[in-house]
Length: 532
Ligand code: ACM
Image 1 (spheres, protein in one colour):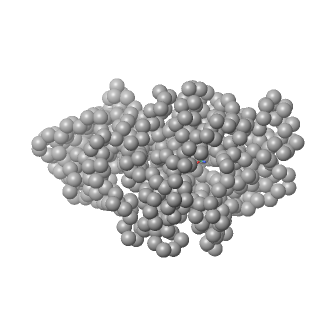
Image 2 (cartoon, protein in one colour):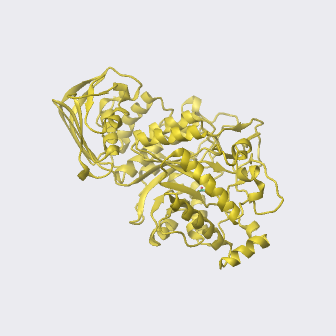
Image 3 (cartoon, helix red, strand yellow):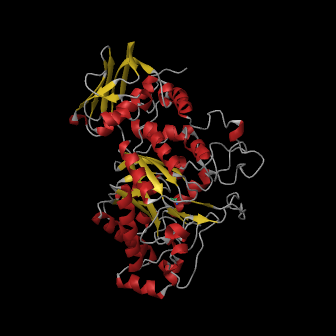
């Protein structure tokens, strides 16, 4: 078994010394933030009380998310900069307690004497989950929050709508969840091939009570939910429910069953903005405090805007030179609405390339570091989200042994080698779990871990050190105890393989580095966000 002090992510400093302290189950925890300390240590069933062996002290001078942790002969002392810092101290303590602390109950823990001082390198340590292409039920989202929080990740970007599904209950626009939340079947073809439809309905959505629960569950675990309503493209599910919001009069739509880019696009006219403001109010009202709200802006086919005399007249009345500027104007208008609601807008990089955004809009450069640098130079906060190596819908190997993926390869080592610091304005990084080919929670586990461990190491510690592979192998014992069906470093278990049926990956169809080259070229064309 690996050493208990093989922490992951790596703390700033950790001294482990001879001797150990026996922390029994049911021990008392005293001081501020006791609730935050108890959550990661649920297996030990700590109770709030006085004079227990676990003591917490608030020290604001440590700064946000920072903590110190000392284990000695008289027990555990946590000094925390804030509630999140206390939570992270307890996460580190859980790692020191050994894999059993990652199960739901344990008899107690033998804690090595240690002194740990720690704080994150980056403020935005994100995980993105596409619940639109395949819905993940609430239980999977809550479990995913537990897992990212165990890695000291602090943002859950929920991609709540796309052409293939709308995932939120809407009292004002009930057809969104009644019509937009399901499709009769799903494409199981390889990328670029004729669709192969599986004949099986798919769908689901979060009720307002579900969203409230997800928001509160995340906040308790120092995770901020960043909801995404992706507009004006990727909107076929919205248009299936409310076709009048479209850019072509009289056109009807169905929730898409195939993957790829739809040319259907929301109209940028005022009724669409009013509709989205109501949706923003509903999502923020349900989730609770929403400091960031993602409005997408990616992969828009602007042909229907160009072809519409009404939209052309509106564009001219705004003094805008082309549909690219109209695209940026539309997203900036939404960002202004969000600012009135207390949320900062987040966008994919197309919205930066097409025109002028609000200065406080956060940009996610999925098409590479080049556009990330340009967004940073323009003064935006930037969260690095490049396809390589942070799109975890790519397989870990170019092998038929892998389960079906969009392309390949993004390995754990690729993620560990990633340097997000392309500019001083980079506030963090985030890995993406696009779910065209993530149909269920088991596949989600396989795609997310252990690549997510490497992303967490870089996000928290700033880079992965040479001993990362050793620490990761210890850490996988913790994930095994938790019940995570991660991809073993040596390759998939027999039951995780692609097999001979539709789950089989086809190597060579989409090499990730070809995609990266192509995407970078596209970032130099401001008036067309269209992928080709
Ligand atoms: C994206 O991959 N369209 C953000």
